[in-house]
Length: 263
Image (cartoon, rainbow, N blue to C red; front, side, top):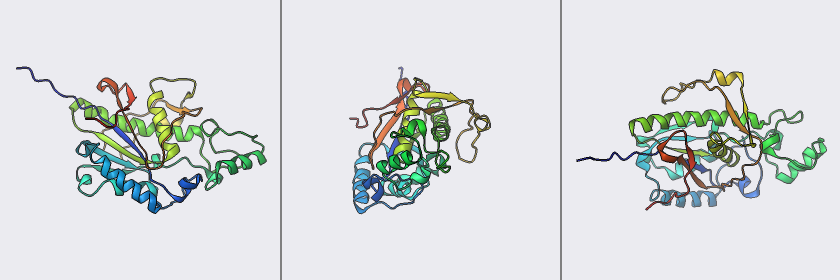
């Protein structure tokens, strides 16, 4: 009698940290290590309870987090010690928020006013212009954040490709930030469907990239990376959850999984 093998298509869950005082007020927050608000703690605790009935935690192999406290605290409020027994938990600097430099702690209107004083005009498209300029050397360009997130995508796709080949569980959960996660999600799709919102670019460090510091399968050096040049028009509120996966159980068909809730 023929028995079909059920292929396990891996998923990648993106979870933005819960509410902080600055996410509530709309202030740009990168390196400032804020705590969650009491409201943020309450909401993410309830979300964790709900996720246990939606997500199969037994299939999660890796949990990656930004090094920021607000991301790690969000992880701790969703995953208990029992959940983590079979998972590898990794803090990854590639998941830190966009480095805003002198824009840190400012509202969008304040950034626009500052840039106008500096001679950059009335408008600002962070996805194209980034934050780094002659007045803001500690800010990050769109090429720089694009490169580190492209590295991260290749890392987790390598993990999941090995899982597909062996039919092993290899779901991944990522705890990070608003700009970072929207950027990552956009690169996830545009790596296949490259449109005019992207530019390919080669940089020397990409050719030498090989990260063997984690307990993950060997990763080939990168030959190129992608970065955004315009707004992807994605939204992910504080404490929000999104899900990425693959069509037809094919690593070459990265997709957005719309039906997070399945019967």
